[in-house]
Length: 421
Image (cartoon, rainbow, N blue to C red; front, side, top):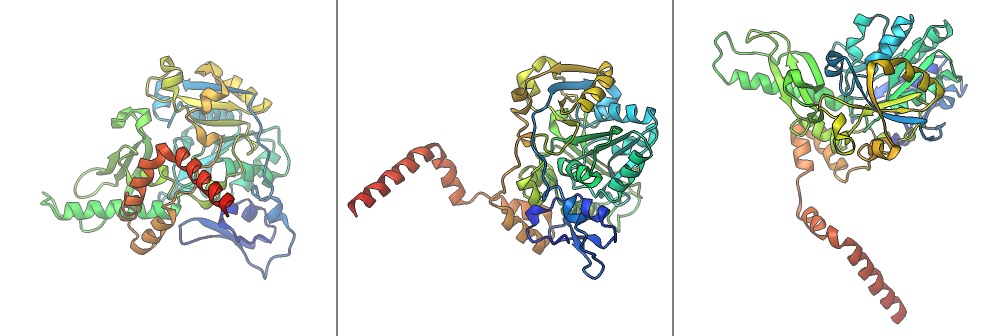
Protein backbone atom coordinates (compact mmCIF):
# COMPACT_ATOMS: atom_id res chain seq x y z
CA UNK A 1 0.00 0.00 0.00
CA UNK A 2 1.28 3.44 -0.92
CA UNK A 3 2.06 5.43 2.21
CA UNK A 4 3.93 8.73 1.82
CA UNK A 5 6.26 9.36 4.75
CA UNK A 6 8.81 11.53 2.94
CA UNK A 7 7.24 14.05 0.56
CA UNK A 8 10.45 14.23 -1.46
CA UNK A 9 9.67 10.66 -2.52
CA UNK A 10 6.39 11.39 -4.29
CA UNK A 11 6.26 13.30 -7.58
CA UNK A 12 2.46 13.31 -7.77
CA UNK A 13 2.35 11.65 -11.22
CA UNK A 14 -0.84 9.76 -10.35
CA UNK A 15 0.32 6.37 -11.62
CA UNK A 16 -0.61 4.69 -8.33
CA UNK A 17 -4.09 6.26 -8.31
CA UNK A 18 -4.85 5.14 -11.87
CA UNK A 19 -3.43 1.62 -11.52
CA UNK A 20 -5.19 0.68 -8.27
CA UNK A 21 -7.70 -2.10 -9.12
CA UNK A 22 -9.95 -1.17 -6.18
CA UNK A 23 -9.81 2.58 -6.85
CA UNK A 24 -9.02 3.11 -3.19
CA UNK A 25 -6.30 5.75 -3.73
CA UNK A 26 -7.14 9.44 -4.13
CA UNK A 27 -5.09 12.62 -4.36
CA UNK A 28 -5.30 15.10 -1.48
CA UNK A 29 -3.75 18.57 -1.46
CA UNK A 30 -1.34 19.29 1.39
CA UNK A 31 -0.73 22.64 3.12
CA UNK A 32 1.71 23.66 0.35
CA UNK A 33 -0.91 23.09 -2.33
CA UNK A 34 0.61 19.89 -3.78
CA UNK A 35 -1.42 16.70 -4.37
CA UNK A 36 -0.37 13.47 -2.65
CA UNK A 37 -1.94 10.00 -2.85
CA UNK A 38 -3.71 8.53 0.16
CA UNK A 39 -5.09 5.00 0.27
CA UNK A 40 -8.29 3.90 1.96
CA UNK A 41 -7.00 1.05 4.14
CA UNK A 42 -10.46 -0.50 4.42
CA UNK A 43 -10.62 -1.03 0.65
CA UNK A 44 -6.96 -1.88 0.01
CA UNK A 45 -6.27 -5.53 -0.89
CA UNK A 46 -2.46 -5.22 -0.58
CA UNK A 47 -1.86 -6.16 -4.22
CA UNK A 48 1.23 -3.92 -4.31
CA UNK A 49 0.50 -2.52 -7.77
CA UNK A 50 0.64 1.05 -6.50
CA UNK A 51 4.26 0.56 -5.41
CA UNK A 52 5.22 -1.32 -8.57
CA UNK A 53 4.20 1.56 -10.81
CA UNK A 54 5.83 4.31 -8.70
CA UNK A 55 8.63 5.98 -10.73
CA UNK A 56 10.46 6.99 -7.57
CA UNK A 57 10.39 3.56 -5.93
CA UNK A 58 11.29 2.03 -9.32
CA UNK A 59 13.48 4.70 -10.98
CA UNK A 60 14.87 4.42 -14.49
CA UNK A 61 18.51 4.64 -15.53
CA UNK A 62 20.02 7.77 -17.12
CA UNK A 63 21.27 7.26 -20.65
CA UNK A 64 22.92 9.56 -23.18
CA UNK A 65 20.89 10.79 -26.17
CA UNK A 66 21.51 9.48 -29.68
CA UNK A 67 21.67 13.03 -31.03
CA UNK A 68 20.94 16.61 -29.98
CA UNK A 69 19.56 19.43 -32.15
CA UNK A 70 18.68 23.09 -32.09
CA UNK A 71 15.44 23.50 -34.05
CA UNK A 72 12.70 25.92 -35.00
CA UNK A 73 9.43 25.51 -36.85
CA UNK A 74 9.50 27.00 -40.36
CA UNK A 75 5.88 28.11 -39.92
CA UNK A 76 6.30 31.53 -38.30
CA UNK A 77 2.73 31.62 -36.98
CA UNK A 78 3.05 28.25 -35.26
CA UNK A 79 6.40 29.19 -33.76
CA UNK A 80 5.13 32.48 -32.35
CA UNK A 81 2.09 30.67 -30.92
CA UNK A 82 4.45 28.25 -29.14
CA UNK A 83 6.61 28.74 -26.06
CA UNK A 84 9.91 27.99 -27.78
CA UNK A 85 10.60 26.62 -31.28
CA UNK A 86 7.22 25.12 -32.10
CA UNK A 87 8.14 21.41 -32.18
CA UNK A 88 5.24 19.98 -30.17
CA UNK A 89 2.60 21.10 -32.65
CA UNK A 90 4.40 19.31 -35.50
CA UNK A 91 4.60 16.04 -33.57
CA UNK A 92 0.95 16.43 -32.55
CA UNK A 93 -0.21 17.09 -36.11
CA UNK A 94 1.73 14.06 -37.33
CA UNK A 95 0.01 11.87 -34.72
CA UNK A 96 -3.50 13.15 -35.45
CA UNK A 97 -3.11 12.82 -39.22
CA UNK A 98 -2.30 9.16 -38.59
CA UNK A 99 -5.58 8.76 -36.74
CA UNK A 100 -3.88 9.01 -33.36
CA UNK A 101 -4.52 10.80 -30.08
CA UNK A 102 -2.39 13.43 -28.32
CA UNK A 103 -2.14 13.87 -24.55
CA UNK A 104 -0.78 17.03 -22.98
CA UNK A 105 -1.30 19.72 -20.34
CA UNK A 106 -4.17 22.19 -20.63
CA UNK A 107 -5.92 24.76 -18.44
CA UNK A 108 -9.31 23.72 -17.08
CA UNK A 109 -12.30 25.97 -16.37
CA UNK A 110 -10.71 27.26 -13.15
CA UNK A 111 -7.31 27.83 -14.83
CA UNK A 112 -5.72 24.93 -13.02
CA UNK A 113 -3.55 22.62 -15.14
CA UNK A 114 -4.77 19.15 -16.09
CA UNK A 115 -3.73 16.63 -18.69
CA UNK A 116 -6.28 16.04 -21.42
CA UNK A 117 -6.32 14.77 -25.00
CA UNK A 118 -6.84 16.03 -28.54
CA UNK A 119 -8.05 14.01 -31.51
CA UNK A 120 -8.46 16.82 -34.05
CA UNK A 121 -6.18 19.63 -35.18
CA UNK A 122 -8.64 22.20 -33.79
CA UNK A 123 -8.30 20.66 -30.31
CA UNK A 124 -4.52 21.10 -30.19
CA UNK A 125 -4.34 24.79 -29.27
CA UNK A 126 -5.12 24.37 -25.51
CA UNK A 127 -2.30 21.81 -25.28
CA UNK A 128 0.29 24.21 -26.72
CA UNK A 129 2.61 26.46 -24.69
CA UNK A 130 4.24 25.90 -21.33
CA UNK A 131 2.19 25.91 -18.13
CA UNK A 132 4.36 26.50 -15.07
CA UNK A 133 2.09 24.69 -12.64
CA UNK A 134 2.09 21.01 -11.71
CA UNK A 135 -0.40 19.22 -13.95
CA UNK A 136 -2.95 16.68 -12.74
CA UNK A 137 -2.74 13.64 -15.04
CA UNK A 138 -6.30 12.69 -14.01
CA UNK A 139 -7.13 9.43 -15.90
CA UNK A 140 -4.94 10.04 -18.95
CA UNK A 141 -2.58 7.12 -18.25
CA UNK A 142 -5.63 4.82 -18.42
CA UNK A 143 -6.96 6.58 -21.51
CA UNK A 144 -3.58 6.30 -23.24
CA UNK A 145 -3.40 2.61 -22.39
CA UNK A 146 -6.85 1.99 -23.90
CA UNK A 147 -5.87 3.81 -27.09
CA UNK A 148 -2.60 1.90 -27.33
CA UNK A 149 -4.34 -1.46 -26.89
CA UNK A 150 -6.78 -0.43 -29.62
CA UNK A 151 -3.84 0.04 -31.95
CA UNK A 152 -3.98 3.84 -32.20
CA UNK A 153 -0.92 6.06 -32.39
CA UNK A 154 -0.44 7.88 -29.08
CA UNK A 155 1.68 10.95 -28.36
CA UNK A 156 1.98 11.63 -24.63
CA UNK A 157 3.79 14.79 -23.52
CA UNK A 158 4.56 15.57 -19.88
CA UNK A 159 7.23 16.35 -17.33
CA UNK A 160 9.99 13.78 -16.88
CA UNK A 161 8.42 12.29 -13.74
CA UNK A 162 5.05 12.01 -15.51
CA UNK A 163 6.61 10.15 -18.43
CA UNK A 164 8.46 7.89 -15.98
CA UNK A 165 5.13 7.30 -14.23
CA UNK A 166 3.41 6.53 -17.54
CA UNK A 167 6.11 4.00 -18.47
CA UNK A 168 5.76 2.27 -15.09
CA UNK A 169 1.97 2.34 -15.35
CA UNK A 170 1.94 0.66 -18.78
CA UNK A 171 4.39 -2.05 -17.66
CA UNK A 172 5.39 -2.75 -21.26
CA UNK A 173 6.61 -0.86 -24.31
CA UNK A 174 4.22 -0.12 -27.14
CA UNK A 175 5.40 0.44 -30.70
CA UNK A 176 2.55 2.91 -31.21
CA UNK A 177 3.52 5.14 -28.25
CA UNK A 178 5.71 8.21 -28.64
CA UNK A 179 6.59 9.52 -25.16
CA UNK A 180 7.97 13.06 -24.96
CA UNK A 181 9.17 14.84 -21.84
CA UNK A 182 10.30 18.41 -21.31
CA UNK A 183 13.45 19.89 -19.83
CA UNK A 184 11.93 20.61 -16.43
CA UNK A 185 13.09 23.19 -13.88
CA UNK A 186 10.52 21.92 -11.39
CA UNK A 187 6.77 21.79 -10.73
CA UNK A 188 5.27 24.86 -8.97
CA UNK A 189 2.47 24.48 -6.45
CA UNK A 190 -1.11 24.45 -7.81
CA UNK A 191 -2.21 25.96 -4.49
CA UNK A 192 0.14 28.92 -4.87
CA UNK A 193 -0.99 29.37 -8.47
CA UNK A 194 -4.62 29.50 -7.33
CA UNK A 195 -3.76 32.12 -4.72
CA UNK A 196 -1.74 34.12 -7.25
CA UNK A 197 -4.74 34.36 -9.59
CA UNK A 198 -7.01 35.35 -6.71
CA UNK A 199 -4.50 38.00 -5.60
CA UNK A 200 -4.28 39.39 -9.16
CA UNK A 201 -8.03 39.66 -9.55
CA UNK A 202 -8.57 41.20 -6.11
CA UNK A 203 -5.75 43.74 -6.56
CA UNK A 204 -7.25 44.75 -9.90
CA UNK A 205 -10.70 45.14 -8.34
CA UNK A 206 -9.33 47.33 -5.56
CA UNK A 207 -7.43 49.51 -8.01
CA UNK A 208 -10.51 50.03 -10.15
CA UNK A 209 -12.80 50.57 -7.16
CA UNK A 210 -10.51 53.36 -5.98
CA UNK A 211 -10.78 55.24 -9.26
CA UNK A 212 -13.60 57.08 -11.03
CA UNK A 213 -14.96 54.87 -13.82
CA UNK A 214 -17.31 56.21 -16.46
CA UNK A 215 -19.74 53.28 -16.13
CA UNK A 216 -19.60 51.87 -12.63
CA UNK A 217 -17.08 50.69 -10.12
CA UNK A 218 -16.06 47.04 -10.20
CA UNK A 219 -17.84 45.54 -7.19
CA UNK A 220 -16.25 42.07 -7.33
CA UNK A 221 -12.98 40.59 -8.48
CA UNK A 222 -13.02 39.86 -12.25
CA UNK A 223 -12.80 36.31 -13.54
CA UNK A 224 -9.69 35.15 -15.40
CA UNK A 225 -10.31 34.59 -19.12
CA UNK A 226 -6.85 34.01 -20.59
CA UNK A 227 -3.37 33.00 -19.35
CA UNK A 228 -0.15 32.92 -21.33
CA UNK A 229 3.10 32.17 -19.49
CA UNK A 230 5.18 32.65 -22.62
CA UNK A 231 3.73 35.56 -24.57
CA UNK A 232 5.84 36.67 -27.50
CA UNK A 233 5.90 39.44 -30.09
CA UNK A 234 2.12 39.87 -30.39
CA UNK A 235 2.11 40.93 -26.73
CA UNK A 236 5.29 42.95 -26.98
CA UNK A 237 7.78 40.39 -25.64
CA UNK A 238 10.77 38.55 -27.00
CA UNK A 239 11.18 34.80 -26.53
CA UNK A 240 13.82 35.17 -23.81
CA UNK A 241 11.72 37.57 -21.74
CA UNK A 242 9.09 35.04 -20.57
CA UNK A 243 6.17 37.39 -21.14
CA UNK A 244 3.46 36.62 -18.56
CA UNK A 245 0.01 37.87 -19.58
CA UNK A 246 -3.28 37.30 -17.76
CA UNK A 247 -6.58 38.72 -19.05
CA UNK A 248 -9.91 38.97 -17.26
CA UNK A 249 -13.27 38.28 -18.85
CA UNK A 250 -15.37 41.11 -20.28
CA UNK A 251 -16.91 43.37 -17.68
CA UNK A 252 -18.61 46.71 -17.24
CA UNK A 253 -15.24 48.45 -17.56
CA UNK A 254 -14.31 47.12 -20.96
CA UNK A 255 -13.35 44.08 -22.97
CA UNK A 256 -10.85 41.58 -21.50
CA UNK A 257 -8.95 43.90 -19.12
CA UNK A 258 -5.32 43.00 -18.48
CA UNK A 259 -4.69 41.75 -14.95
CA UNK A 260 -0.95 41.53 -15.54
CA UNK A 261 1.50 41.82 -18.43
CA UNK A 262 5.16 41.59 -17.48
CA UNK A 263 8.40 39.68 -17.88
CA UNK A 264 9.19 36.78 -15.55
CA UNK A 265 11.64 39.00 -13.65
CA UNK A 266 8.76 41.33 -12.78
CA UNK A 267 6.03 38.75 -12.19
CA UNK A 268 5.88 37.57 -8.57
CA UNK A 269 4.77 34.00 -9.38
CA UNK A 270 7.53 33.48 -11.93
CA UNK A 271 10.13 34.96 -9.59
CA UNK A 272 9.09 32.55 -6.83
CA UNK A 273 9.25 29.72 -9.39
CA UNK A 274 12.68 30.61 -10.76
CA UNK A 275 14.00 31.07 -7.20
CA UNK A 276 12.78 27.51 -6.43
CA UNK A 277 10.63 28.56 -3.47
CA UNK A 278 7.37 27.01 -4.69
CA UNK A 279 8.60 23.75 -6.21
CA UNK A 280 7.36 20.31 -5.17
CA UNK A 281 9.79 18.72 -2.67
CA UNK A 282 10.46 15.80 -5.05
CA UNK A 283 11.75 18.25 -7.67
CA UNK A 284 14.84 18.82 -5.53
CA UNK A 285 15.57 15.08 -5.66
CA UNK A 286 14.32 14.27 -9.17
CA UNK A 287 15.22 10.75 -10.35
CA UNK A 288 14.06 11.24 -13.95
CA UNK A 289 16.82 13.49 -15.31
CA UNK A 290 19.18 12.74 -18.24
CA UNK A 291 16.92 10.36 -20.11
CA UNK A 292 15.98 8.29 -17.05
CA UNK A 293 12.29 8.99 -17.69
CA UNK A 294 12.19 6.66 -20.68
CA UNK A 295 11.10 9.45 -23.06
CA UNK A 296 11.72 8.94 -26.77
CA UNK A 297 12.31 12.68 -27.21
CA UNK A 298 13.12 15.43 -24.73
CA UNK A 299 12.19 18.98 -25.75
CA UNK A 300 12.89 22.37 -24.21
CA UNK A 301 14.08 25.92 -24.78
CA UNK A 302 17.59 26.16 -26.18
CA UNK A 303 18.84 28.61 -23.58
CA UNK A 304 22.22 30.04 -24.51
CA UNK A 305 21.75 29.61 -28.28
CA UNK A 306 22.69 33.28 -28.70
CA UNK A 307 26.10 32.44 -27.26
CA UNK A 308 26.84 29.13 -28.99
CA UNK A 309 25.15 29.75 -32.36
CA UNK A 310 24.06 33.40 -32.55
CA UNK A 311 23.28 33.12 -36.25
CA UNK A 312 20.45 30.68 -35.41
CA UNK A 313 18.75 32.97 -32.88
CA UNK A 314 16.12 35.58 -33.81
CA UNK A 315 14.50 35.81 -30.33
CA UNK A 316 11.30 34.22 -31.64
CA UNK A 317 12.00 30.83 -30.09
CA UNK A 318 14.52 28.03 -30.55
CA UNK A 319 14.00 24.53 -29.18
CA UNK A 320 16.51 21.98 -28.00
CA UNK A 321 15.68 18.39 -28.90
CA UNK A 322 17.35 15.36 -27.33
CA UNK A 323 16.68 12.29 -29.48
CA UNK A 324 16.78 9.42 -26.98
CA UNK A 325 15.57 6.32 -28.83
CA UNK A 326 15.26 4.85 -32.32
CA UNK A 327 11.53 5.54 -32.14
CA UNK A 328 12.28 9.14 -31.28
CA UNK A 329 14.72 9.35 -34.20
CA UNK A 330 12.03 8.02 -36.57
CA UNK A 331 9.51 10.64 -35.40
CA UNK A 332 12.19 13.32 -35.66
CA UNK A 333 12.87 12.43 -39.30
CA UNK A 334 9.16 12.79 -40.04
CA UNK A 335 9.04 16.42 -38.91
CA UNK A 336 12.52 17.55 -40.03
CA UNK A 337 11.24 18.76 -43.46
CA UNK A 338 9.18 21.36 -41.62
CA UNK A 339 12.06 22.52 -39.42
CA UNK A 340 15.25 24.52 -39.54
CA UNK A 341 17.71 22.39 -37.59
CA UNK A 342 21.28 22.46 -36.39
CA UNK A 343 23.03 19.44 -34.90
CA UNK A 344 24.83 20.48 -31.73
CA UNK A 345 27.01 18.85 -29.10
CA UNK A 346 25.63 17.62 -25.79
CA UNK A 347 27.79 20.18 -23.95
CA UNK A 348 26.45 23.05 -26.07
CA UNK A 349 22.87 21.97 -25.40
CA UNK A 350 23.30 21.62 -21.64
CA UNK A 351 25.68 24.51 -20.89
CA UNK A 352 22.71 26.80 -20.09
CA UNK A 353 20.18 24.00 -19.61
CA UNK A 354 21.39 22.50 -16.36
CA UNK A 355 17.81 21.44 -15.56
CA UNK A 356 18.39 18.58 -18.01
CA UNK A 357 21.38 17.40 -15.98
CA UNK A 358 20.39 17.72 -12.34
CA UNK A 359 17.64 18.89 -9.99
CA UNK A 360 17.79 22.33 -8.41
CA UNK A 361 18.93 22.67 -4.81
CA UNK A 362 16.52 23.41 -1.96
CA UNK A 363 16.71 27.17 -1.32
CA UNK A 364 17.68 28.26 2.19
CA UNK A 365 14.61 30.50 2.41
CA UNK A 366 12.07 27.81 1.47
CA UNK A 367 10.86 27.12 5.04
CA UNK A 368 10.55 30.82 5.77
CA UNK A 369 8.57 31.43 2.58
CA UNK A 370 6.05 28.69 3.36
CA UNK A 371 5.69 29.82 6.96
CA UNK A 372 4.83 33.31 5.73
CA UNK A 373 2.60 32.12 2.92
CA UNK A 374 0.51 29.85 5.12
CA UNK A 375 0.01 32.76 7.51
CA UNK A 376 -0.74 35.58 5.06
CA UNK A 377 -1.94 33.84 1.84
CA UNK A 378 -0.18 36.66 0.01
CA UNK A 379 2.39 35.49 -2.53
CA UNK A 380 3.94 38.93 -2.95
CA UNK A 381 4.34 39.60 0.77
CA UNK A 382 5.73 36.11 1.45
CA UNK A 383 8.17 36.18 -1.43
CA UNK A 384 9.54 39.68 -0.83
CA UNK A 385 9.94 39.12 2.90
CA UNK A 386 11.54 35.69 2.42
CA UNK A 387 14.18 36.89 -0.05
CA UNK A 388 15.04 40.02 1.91
CA UNK A 389 18.81 40.35 2.04
CA UNK A 390 20.03 40.05 5.62
CA UNK A 391 23.33 41.19 7.09
CA UNK A 392 24.44 37.55 7.18
CA UNK A 393 23.64 37.21 3.47
CA UNK A 394 25.65 40.33 2.65
CA UNK A 395 28.65 39.06 4.61
CA UNK A 396 28.39 35.66 2.90
CA UNK A 397 28.36 37.29 -0.55
CA UNK A 398 31.34 39.50 0.27
CA UNK A 399 33.35 36.59 1.68
CA UNK A 400 32.53 34.18 -1.16
CA UNK A 401 35.62 35.07 -3.26
CA UNK A 402 37.77 34.17 -0.24
CA UNK A 403 35.87 30.98 0.63
CA UNK A 404 38.60 28.56 -0.46
CA UNK A 405 41.30 30.52 1.39
CA UNK A 406 39.21 30.70 4.59
CA UNK A 407 38.42 26.98 4.51
CA UNK A 408 42.11 26.10 4.12
CA UNK A 409 43.06 28.49 6.92
CA UNK A 410 40.47 27.02 9.29
CA UNK A 411 41.64 23.48 8.51
CA UNK A 412 45.27 24.49 9.06
CA UNK A 413 44.47 26.11 12.39
CA UNK A 414 42.41 23.08 13.42
CA UNK A 415 45.37 20.86 12.52
CA UNK A 416 47.75 22.92 14.65
CA UNK A 417 45.33 22.77 17.56
CA UNK A 418 45.12 19.01 17.24
CA UNK A 419 48.90 18.50 17.11
CA UNK A 420 49.41 20.71 20.17
CA UNK A 421 46.90 18.66 22.09
